[in-house]
Amino acid sequence: MNRDTQMVELIREMAAEYQQKLDALISATNSMDSNSFWKTIRAHGERTLDRFREVQSRFVYLLDRMENSDSLVKAFRNLSRCFDEMQALFLVMSDRYFQDVLNKKNKRREGGQ
Image (cartoon, rainbow, N blue to C red; front, side):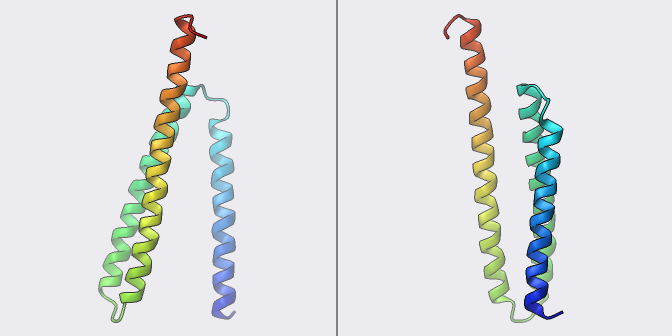
């Protein structure tokens, strides 16, 4: 199998893994109440970030031992920055949405809407 074919296959496998994880998460959270859902999503996000940082550290360690790894380091930094932006967006979105849900519930209890 040539390198291009290997890369395409790797991307295909990663896309399938993503879809499996997404389906499992949807299935696991489908019947949860709002409070449990948001706590679960937040905790899952934190565990994912911890795992990413662990792998990131190992990757930097390996890159440091390679010769002529400047272009790989640059690509890795860009990949890490993208992940950090996605993680920040996820956290802000989930926190804000959870606050909005709680505010709506509180207003209803108080007779607001």
